[in-house]
Image 1 (cartoon, rainbow, N blue to C red):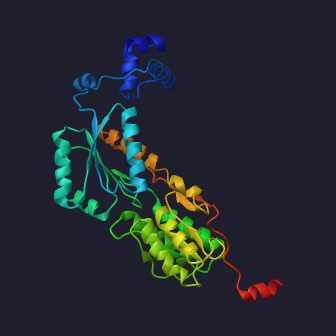
Image 2: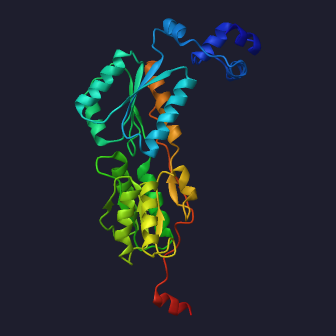
Image 3: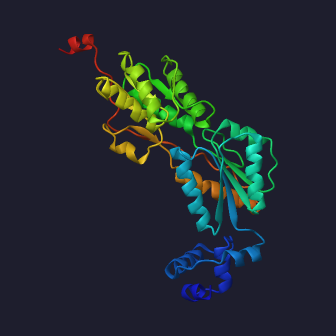
Length: 336
């Protein structure tokens, strides 16, 4: 720390305040200290800091569904942001989401003396289980499509589903069919709500959604059903993996994408831009979800009552898997 102070031209007390996240340091001083820390590759001693702060300097994470893109990227964001703040992370991965499983997870983390907990389990069952518990430390929950409230980090997935659906409507499609996620997932409900709302606002019919399970295989099964119905010209799949399955099934069945059927996904997995055709989709910055979760739990751990974080907003990415619907024979005659 003395070397950092000497290089930054400040006192070691100032270095300590910066490293401990104190608000009593000017932005200019903070930048000088952080530059010196980076140049010297200074690493704080967690044990020594824990003795001073009487904290374990660790954040617990309760997770479920990490095979899905959003939660997995959010987890990386949590770990990275916690490390930047000087905290270790302690992960408990659940295979069930009942009251007992959640209580056992929190008991395990409490035994390790974590200073706060982030729950990264975006299912209705997780919210129910958490609601029946009384955690001993500050707790923050990831709630896709949820409200902006204290203790909650949200992604505006209702708005994201609206963006996807409106994109297809504005291209001229008479309705948009939907491949939903499995029941019980918060993202499934939010995306269904956004899809239905966009169709209702446009005065268009909403056909019963085809239920998937987030996998490409379930998307393929849905695509086979759509391929047999030539009235289907637009499909919104609730994630990119299912959208890939839909596209493959349509092409295998002799349907052109987007010439005959447009397909849009959700999430913007890294591979989506390299699908053939490149997949139109809706993107969320799930790394920002992780950063917000850590910032929020740190504020609560410090005894403050921060404003509820604003839900992470969606971004529409229009690529080559969506286009106007094919013209009917009557439309072709009018143009000839």
